[in-house]
Length: 462
Image (tube, rainbow, N blue to C red; front, side, top):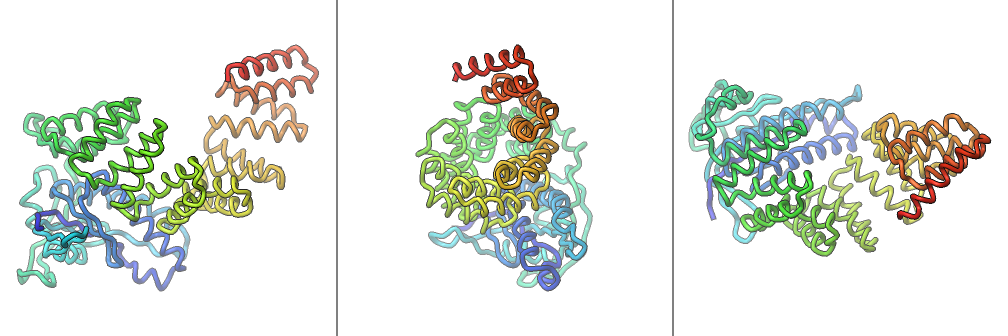
């Protein structure tokens, strides 16, 4: 089978030098984060194939415009992400380079593996790209909407394996937002609407309506647009329309049965609706279609634990961390799992690792504090305070810190945190009861009875 694709190669500059200068765990963490970021972003743009090798990451897109948008956003996101990854003085900075070419690719029979001159040329283009830049061929320029992009000539290059002696390459630097916004809506294609929707995603709550409008226009123009249907499913679930979300996920999978992100997102919806068997089937299909799908491994681990399959849950947690050792959420969730099994020491080590990776991770602070309450109340107090500092509206942290302070005899400070917990959860039975006990200890029996009564009412409602 042969088909025309926009092939995109990404790689980290100087990563081979970094292997010699950085500790092995550090460089592995950086490369894993590069891989995770690029995969996550590529999934938003609907890549049709990906392959990770020691020489870089290959993605295939059906559209040159989509490929260029993806490449530019990936470079911008990696600039932000790598700042925290190379903060140590001895660390080696590793910028990214991206190359793109459009041409014929061939799928190996009965395999999700692709070969072709377009892929080879894209790799050579990437190898010649400058740090933190996207280089493309003339073929890409001929296919994209040129007025929307800022680009310059990068020069002529000899690309090994190319049928041309030399090939002109171009550096695409940015998208001209003014030119993009000035385009007539009547002239916009389904792909234009899809890209506009992706560009406004996560900008603000008000942007949800615009994002919905963009994807709806995309599927009106092209009903068989799986990526637009998937993104509509995500949005409808977010705003509380599970029926519409279900319809769009099914439509996305009807047009692309091996669409891993649609399987994953549909599984999340089904799990939230309590349809655990169906959710599990879609998590498995997401992992089958994309074996290194870290988020699917983690979510499925949580579902397996919730449904009583602890052996498989632990295997999935471990595979998640093998694929992405620096995944703070996975360390935290695995810690919760281990603590439920009674393995407190290992749980605490995973909470600590989550906090090393993400120091402002409120939930990990809370979980570590809860685990330390009996063995080290003072350190537990520090972590409850850190959780509240990271998330001032963390009701459980306020309540548990209040209990610690109450037991230590600091009644005024305890009362302050009980009050904060009740401000956030006025009908919480346990907090009302605890505040009743505190009021009783302070000799205010009338106030104590008021809180005890609230606790009884809250308990009766449960």
